[in-house]
Image 1: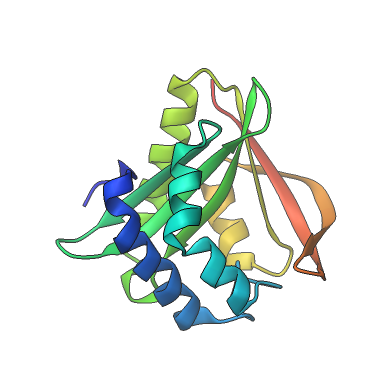
Image 2: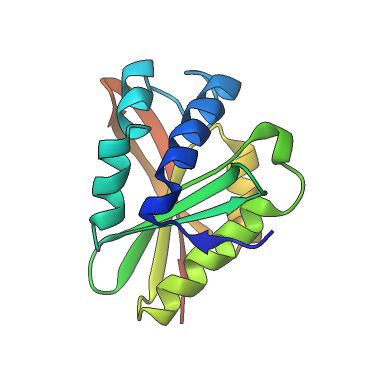
Length: 164
């Protein structure tokens, strides 16, 4: 299973994927801190996903088996030099198979090919699994910040890595 760039043809499977991933972890799950069911309903809606896919500043990648999306990654343009690896999600039952690594590599490779020089990622300071993962991918810790997620203050660690 190799990651591919998501297209409008993937929207229905992405809708199911986001709801399934949320169902596995819920509001206290790593990567979902502060997220509400209302937010999940919004980001898993057909309208929202089609809008994201049409946004040239956002790239979305998926890895799937014959019938369903098992993992997702996205990048968001920060400026002409930098992108944010704005999300990686792998269904719990599909973890440990290297899908997150493949998704990150695909997203970072595409960003490098598009001419970006730096990638940034943010995750909760207590999400040690994600921090270890990103460091293994070549990211280094450059500090922390407080972000507002649906009215919930969340302390995040900011990691960066060069792409060139």
